[in-house]
Length: 353
Image (spheres, rainbow, N blue to C red):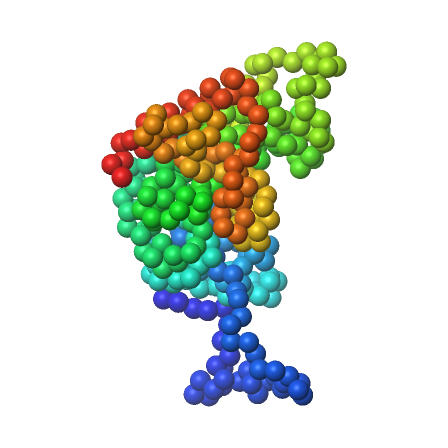
C-alpha cells in the first residue's frame, strides 16, 4: 500500500497532463534530473509518531515523509488525514506502507514503534516488550538507508538506542536517542515559570538516563547569560536544596502525570523531535541533550567493557553527533551521572547483544 502526495496522470489512459497544463518559457533549459530532496521516515504511527510527523510537516523540514506501521488501515487513515491538509501546508510528498522498503534512501529515520507505556510503568520495564520488535525492524531499515541518521524515540530510549546501534552496524555518530531533550525543555519551563520569564531565555540541561536516574545540572543553569546559583550566592539570597530537588522531581514525573491524565504523551515529544530533525538535516550545529555513546566522557568508562548510551549535551549536524560539549560538572553531578550510567549498563548487560 503506497500513495504519493500528488499525481500528474489525471487525463484519459493515464495521460500526463502536467506538460499540457504548463507551457515552458522560451530559452529555458530542461529540468535537472538530479534534484536533491530531503526524506524523513517515521516508523510507528501511534500518538507519538503522528505528533512528530505532523510537527515536521508543518515546519516544512522534509520534501518527503514516509510513514510505516503494521496497522494498514490506521496507517492509510493517518496518511489521508495529512494529505487532505495539503492546501494549508508546505508541499510535501506523503507516503504510507507496511513495508520497510518504503523508507529507502531516507536522510533521517525516526523510530517510535513499540509498546505504549502504561501508567506507573518505568521506562526500563518496557525493554523486553520492545527488544524483539527492534530485532526485526532495525536491520531492514539500516539496509535500505545505509547513509541515514537513525533517531530512536521508543522507550526505554537509552537502551533501545544502544540496541539500534548494535543491530544497525552504523557508526556511533549516526545513531541517536531523543534522550533528555524533552526533559530539559520541561526543566527550562519549570525554572522559567518560577521566575516568570520566557523558557527560551533559560539555559538548563537534564542529562543521564531518560528516566528516574537523570541528573539536573544546577551548577550550569543560566538566565539571560547570568549563572543563577552563583547570582543567588553573590546576592546572599537563600535557597533550599529541597526546592531544587522538587523541581527535578517534577521533571522526572512530568511524563507520568501526562500519561495518567490523557493516557499518553504526544505534542511535547513531537516538538522535541522536530527540533532534533531540524538541527540534523539543516546542519544547524545546535547543542541538544540527546542519548549518545557516552563511554570516555565525564568519567564514564563502562567499567572497561560496557558501552552505555545516555544523554549528554551534544552538537548535532548533518552527519549526526559532531561532538559532546565539555561542560563543567560539579563533583556531585559527575558522581550522579556515573551512577546513571551504571543503571543503564546493568540493563544493557542483560541483552546478550
